[in-house]
Image (cartoon, rainbow, N blue to C red; front, top):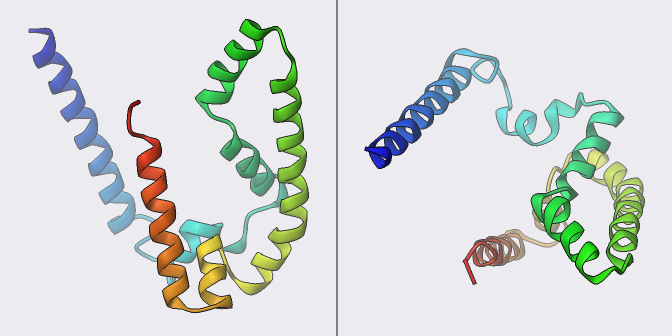
Length: 142
């Protein structure tokens, strides 16, 4: 009985998300958009600096940092993990300060888009494939 309830709940919520997404895409603001892909990736270049900064910082934040890293630090009684995350945040800010203006001026939203503009479509395709394959492999259970 419990498994039927879980599967039913999953299907209902998945259907609700699919219906909401369909409504937004076909009837909402994306239906009136001239360039939905540009608005999706870069917010139509209308995002303020604090939204972009928050997005960059939250991209680096995950369950692994919130749970796994804190557990490892507590277990080892070593604060090296704290330093790692502190300097990772500083490195992201420096990287954003250097590369974000270049990407925004060029009208780019992704690293692979930059590679496609700098080199060619073949390079962009190869790098995108490598990124996707390694991203998928990263989710395989050990």
